[in-house]
Structures are given as structure tokens and as C-alpha cells.
Image (cartoon, rainbow, N blue to C red; front, side):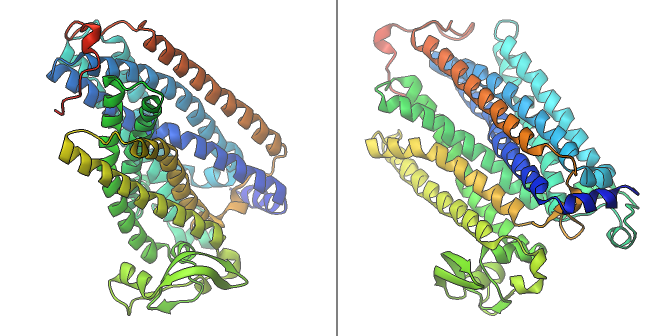
Length: 472
């Protein structure tokens, strides 16, 4: 403990070191979070395909499940690498933080690791269980994979939620003496922010995974591969995303209300609210320039009505905290607006698709809908990254809100810029490897080199392969 103030002082004066540490962590998180979404939600899509195959003796569905399982293994392997890099970065880049609060948040990290290994074990069982297990037992091995992903998400979000709203130790004693006392890891894990963050992030994993899967098959559809497998791949991905989008928007509203009460400075930055205001407007677009909001469309009383269900509700502004404790409002606001804009655009897309499916029994095959579905995949990723930008940048300059600044946590060691370059090269190589491997697998499948599922109905004749998908 006696060395931590020295670390903080050295790091605080090295602005370049801090900037590269921020970039390195942001790049790692931004990369890994996409793979994490697949790790959590992809098993559910595989389960839906596998269940359909068993329930309806559907060879195409079983084929899809088997292929998706192989893709999931590739993505899981890459995610394991990027996740390991992140775990090292927490200690290497932020020794002041981990050295001080490791005992407080360490339990959540440990539990997340346990569920990560459980997920890996059962994924291996599923991949190699096609011939050694009965059909129903084999399908059931997907459930612990999906459940492990959900629990792992909860525990890692518990750490991030703790950074936003610290708990589980005597905060007053720490601020007075710098000593961490009365540690309660369970109270730290179940802090006041964890439920809202978890309820908002979990559907996001299904939203992103569903739209990315549907997007891949939509690209194939536009290229002329309009067979039943592509129709089914689009349908399953779209269905999962369609269920997740309204849940995501609802939980986002709950999270915003929570932020207004528990993290008012972040909320003020999201709304570009400089002064504490009764009847605060909602701000669409715009930037904060020289202390004034410009180029924005304001909805009178909008924020007060959404936050407190009353035009008389008071919303705290950025003025409530010293200038050096305010986040970069423009970055937070723009990221928040991007997330909201994409979210409601995706809601419009699923409304279009769901209505057509209800009327005609299948998704629209209109070229404009398919093109929109292609764009929905990358758009969902942008929304995900924008949401995390809002969360993380909105907490600045704190690494643990109100308790420790980022400048106190960062390492004073030099050479982080080279680490950043090395990480870009590593992650670029991983991304390239994943694309090469998955494209090679896809090419083999199109050539018919993928063996049929060991159980299920025999392959149909070629003239029946393009039969219509019948909704289950």
C-alpha cells in the first residue's frame, strides 16, 4: 500500500503513458466484446436449430446446427485469446487499481473464470458428441454452454458495475486513509448497478449475434444462394434478434432512469445538460461548444418526463461537479445518440419483418429488406460499441467512480505505445485467421464436402433441397 501513492504520482505526470493505456484497453475491450456476444448467445441459436432438427426430422436444421457448432469453436478459441489478453492488461496497465481493490472484486473474476471453463468443456462435448451421444442428450449439452455464458456475463459485468458504483468496503475510511477495510466481496458483486447493467447487456448479446448471423445469410441470399439453409439461417438469426430488440430498449430505459439517480454526471453528459434544470429538455443531436449546446433539436421537458414522469422533475447538470471531474460530454452524448438511433432503426426493421412473417408465413424476400438485414449486423455492432463508450467514457475521470481516478491507477512503466501496436497486429492476425478458416469451411460446405449429421433423416434428393421452410 505504501508504494501506491508513488505509482499514482509518477503516472499522473506521464500523460502520453495514460493515453496509450486508455487506447490499449479500449481497443482490447472493443474487440473482445463482439466475441463475447457470440460466446453468450450463439449456443442459443445452435440449440434452436438442433431442436428443430430433432423435433421435425429436419436434416437441414441439423446440418445448420453442426456447422454453427464448428464456427462457434473457432470464435470461442479467438475469444479465449482476447479474453486472456484483457485479464493481463488489468494488472499490467492498472496496477494501482488492481493492487488496491483486488480483494474486493477478485471473487467475481474467479467465478467468471469458472464458468468460462465450464462453457469450454461442454462446447467440446457438443462438438465431439455427434456420434457418441443420443440425439436428445447431445442437444442437451448445449444448455450448460448457454447457461455458463449467461453466468459468466453476470460476473464480469459485476466488476464493471462495481467500477461505476463501488461497494463492499468502507469507502469513507479509504478516502480518509487510503486503506481498504471491511471488505465484503458479495456486497461488491451485488452492487447497486449490477442488475440494470446485466439486464441491459444480456439481451444485447442476443441482439448482436442474431443480427450478425442473419446478416451473413442475407449476404449469401443476395449472391444467389436462395436455398432453404440460407432462409433458415436468416430466420433463426432474425427471430432471436427480434425478441431481443424490444427487451433491449425497455431495459435501456430502466438503465437510463437508474443513471439519473445514481450517476447523475454521466446522465448529464448523455443529455448535454450543463445546468441543473427543472423541466429539462431531451436533446437530439448537437454538440457542447464553449459551454453552450449548439445544432441540437430540443424536446421541451422531455428528459424530466422520461426521468421523473413529470415536467417539474429536476435533473442535475454538469455544474454539480468540479470541471476536472466531468467526462468529455460530446463523446458521451454522440455515442449515446448513435446507440439510441440504431436501436430504434432496428426496431423498425424487426417490425417490418415480423408483420410480413405474420401475414405470409415467412420473412420478406424483398431486396430492400434483405439489404437492410445485411446492414443490421454491422449496425448492431456499432450500437454495442457506442453503448460501451457511453458507459466507460461517461465515468471518466474515474476508474472507480468517486473513489480512484484513472491517473492514480495507471502504470508508470514505459513502452505501452509499442504494446498497443503489437496488440493491433495480434488482433489483426486473429481476425484474419478467423475469416480465412470460416470462409474455407463455408467453401467446403458449398461443395458438399460436409458429412451429414450422424442421426436424423437421410439426405433428400437434389430436387427437394430447395423446399420451403415450414414454420414450427
